[in-house]
Each structure stands twice: as structure tokens, then as C-alpha cells.
Length: 483
Image (cartoon, rainbow, N blue to C red; front, side, top):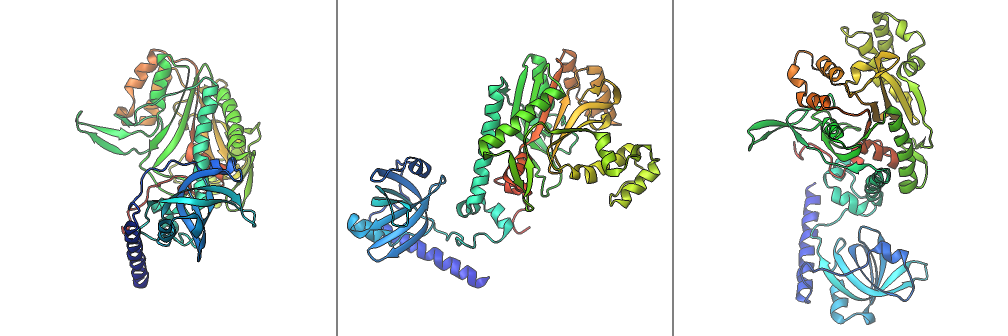
């Protein structure tokens, strides 16, 4: 480790010396603005003999006496450079000797194709635009420490095209979600991220203090109750793409700060939300990926997003995994069967709680292809309407892909009395948890509504083939280094 430190310091000192040499030759120490074309644009409109201006970070350099080949990258792609002594001034040719990998240069020159068939810029002039004082990771070894890739995402993006491509796709997915919804008459809105009371989900919030108001606030765990206030106010088709915060665990599929899409359509229901998903996901796959069949995870499992998607009732899918007689079993036998399948259950739990624990631990994992699980017990979804034929079930779906819930969709509760009763049941002995302001809003009248909330990070994971949420969040939450 000491040797590595000495080596790193030596590299740094040498790079600073190279910077001084460049300054002596009259190059600005950290350059200036440079009018340029992006590499992606140059490739798309490539024409031999055309003069172009481009800029980027040096990734490779091969010096061969009076000529050099190099590659640089500008974030949209990489391109080869050819530099020859008799095409440059003495200052430019000499200065190129003091450039290091990671430095930024701007070039102007003529496009041509090498004998090896590589599109290349024959450089007629170059400018120094910025110095990398620290050595970049080795091209073929990169960042070996996985945590270091997350802590120093800039190096990961610099050296790993796969990582950069994944985040480019994330950006494209967000853009296409907006395009899809806007084209169908939905408008994007924003609701508070700091709220006086947590609502819209059952989760532990982060707390903060508002000095000007001298009051405790929470970072929102969901935007739902504010979005529904907008429906009361007269909006009919709305969505929000934004951050939620939950002070809970961190693992391969959870980050305490995450991105969510929530959509509400007045005069809709669960079925209108189902139709929305069966339109949105194929749209994203076709526009961003160019295919409806996506390879997911290390096993390269193929997920097929061709609609229609399977629909199955909660009770039926539980029976498929736990046995046709599951719901007729006494609670003691249900606990024993669950534990025999490796699921730990609390001895005090009733049959409903045992079932839901087994659903989460065993049943959901079996749903690999896109599936709508419907008719869920009402105790688990207090913001949805009951099924007309069974008040113990709610008219919702849980949309599951690759064994993970991606999106719940509801026929939303718009009866203020029924909503108060559901909130009271959820609050138990703590009536302060009931959001009275939201109940008041509902008493002013909310139309029949369909709503859904989709985890964007999980969606990007599935569409880009990774099983680790940190791979799709640029700066995931982590312990501070050294702690």
C-alpha cells in the first residue's frame, strides 16, 4: 500500500511538472471555452475530407517519433486522432509530448479513414483545455473495488462505457415516460418534498426542522395525498416524477432516496392504469432498447414485455405456490407449513399476516414475467376502493416483474368516510397519524380515479439488465469512507 502511495504521488508530481512545461510553451494552464461538434455528431455525419472541431479527454496515446495516434472521448463517444510533426507548429508538436492520459484537448482537422478502416481526425491545430493532476484508472483493470466505483462514480463513468450507457438509458427512459404521458394528455406537476406529516404509504420517514416555522417536518415518503388534492381541485390527468425518502434499509434493491413516477387519471380505475402500463412499457422498450425482450441479471433471464400481461388474483397465486387448501388451513398449520418452506413467522400472527409474509418471501419470487396480481386483502392497501363483490378485498393490482413489485395500481378511494375508517385502522392507537387535511379535501369531492406509482430505479434495473440498485443511481447512499 505504501508503494502504491509513493507511485501515486510520483505520478501526480510528474503531471504537475508537465503542466508547468505546457505553461512555459505558452499554453493556458486550464484552457478556455472551445467551440466544437460532439463526437456523436461527427460520426453520424462523417465525410472524408471535411474539416471538424472536436474536444474531449485523452484516453490513449501512442507516440511514434514524428507522428502520434491518440483517442479522446467527450461523453458522447470516442474518436481517433492522428498528429504529425509537419502538420503542426513546433510549439504544438512539442507541447503534445507533455500531455497525459485524462487531459482535455480541443482539436481542429480533416476527417479521413486509416488503412485499418478507423475514422480519424488528422489534427492541424490543437488547444490545451484542462489538466488531470491525478492518474486515471488503468484501461483494462479499471476500478477493481466495487464500492470505489460507487464512491467515485466519475471514474466509473470515465473508464466504463457500459456504466455510462446504462445512465444514458436511464435518462432516455425518463424522457420517454414524459413523452408518452404528455402525448396522452397528462400534465406534469410538483408537490412538496417537505411535509408536516408522512402519508401515502406505510414507511419510516426522515425528520427535519423548519427554522422559520419552528416546526418538525418530514421528507415525503410518497406524493400521493398531495396529488389527490389536485384532483379535488379540478385536474384530471396528472403525473409527478420525483424523489421519495424512506429511512429504512439499504440493500441490493433499496436505497433510502429513490425516484418514483405517480400517475392519476380522474374518471379512471384499476383497468385504466393497467392499460397505461401495457402501453408505457412496450413504448419504453421499443424507443430506448429497440426490443421487447430484455436480458436481466447474471443469468441473462429473458423478460418479455409484449402485452397483454398475465393477470392473476392474489389468493389464486398463493394457492399455486402453497397448496390449494392453504386458505382452509387453521392458522397453526399455516404457520407450520410456512416455516417448513423456510419462512420465519411470528407466533402471534393471524392467518392474514402469515399469508402476506409468505407471499412476500416465496410467492412473489415465482412471478418472473410481467404479471398483475389483483384482489389484494384490504388491510394492506388503505387508499384503495373495495372490490364490489367482496369488501374484504381491494380493487388493485401489484405489477410484478422478475420476482419484484414494480408498480401498484388502484381504483382510488374517494369516499371520505371510508378513507377515514381505513386511516383509523392503520393508525391504531395513534390518531394523530390520520391526515385530517386530506380527509377535508376529500369531503369537497374527488372524482372516481385510477392511480399508480412506479419505482423508476427498479424499472431501469430491469430494462438495463442489472440486479443491483446502486448500478442505476449515480450517487447511491453509502457509509462515509473510513467509518
